[in-house]
Length: 116
Image 1 (tube, rainbow, N blue to C red):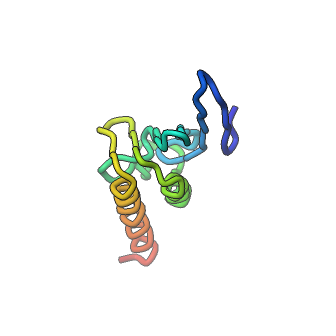
Image 2 (spheres, rainbow, N blue to C red; image 1 turned 30 degrees about the vertical axis):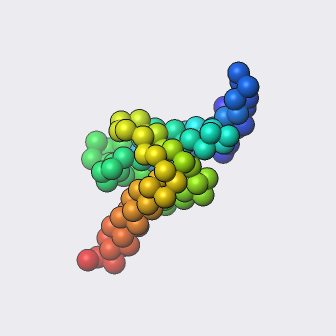
Image 3 (cartoon, rainbow, N blue to C red; image 1 turned 135 degrees about the horizontal axis):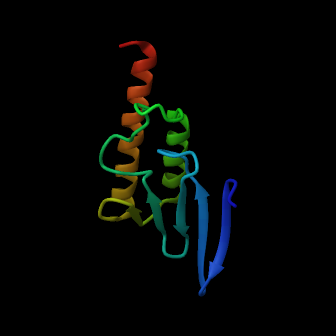
């Protein structure tokens, strides 16, 4: 079980399992600190995330999603490996990709709350 984070080592390689809720409240990302690789599953994709609940599923809060993006950005990964797309290579490219998505989600949230 992983509450917020769990560090482990196997085969001489360090892993950190990080709770990063996004399209699911139980999402985990895997961080390999020595290699600076983040495996983010469905947290990142080049399209807007499914934060809505059209199928009547549980509410997905944008704040949890934004916190998860910030958590990965703070790691400063050299490689970002999402579940459905090609890896992004290069620290600045990764930061820009994650930051752009974060700002898009924040903008839509803020403008929706303002009623625009």
